[in-house]
Length: 120
Ligand code: 5GP
Image 1 (cartoon, protein in one colour):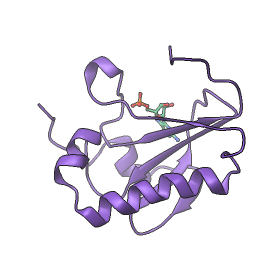
Image 2 (tube, helix red, strand yellow; image 1 turned 90 degrees about the vertical axis):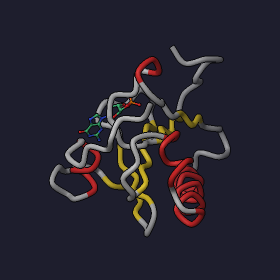
Image 3 (spheres, protein in one colour; image 1 turned 180 degrees about the vertical axis):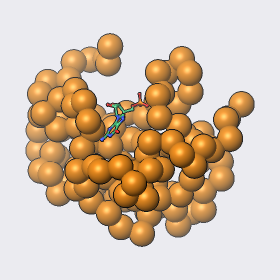
Image 4 (tube, protein in one colour; image 1 turned 90 degrees about the horizontal axis):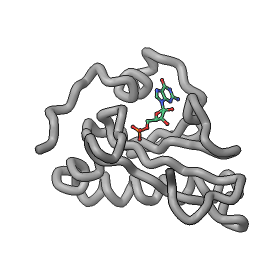
């Protein structure tokens, strides 16, 4: 079961600019910023502007326009950072056993080193 959305989660506060972040992209549907504890030379988080706890919540409740806008933003950020030639990884944690910490949907973009066959 999905938890109710907490409007004071850290990424909601980043969206409202109550907490600083190093933004690299923003549009009507998505905001992207550097992860505070990068696990690779490029580690960017992309989040939808809407209030969604996880990919599960987003895919169930978001409008087609929000989903399209968010998916397109993820690809745009990767291209804008020149990540396509050497490749990159997308990762989204959903729920407790995945290790999801922040309860606002985020897709990790990881790149800049060989990433191995699986994540730890
Ligand atoms: P999760 O485990 O929920 O998929 O990943 C949460 C990510 O958010 C982690 O990689 C963590 O380093 C990052 N993070 C947590 N708090 C902050 C913050 O205040 N600012 C930024 N930029 N990233 C954060």
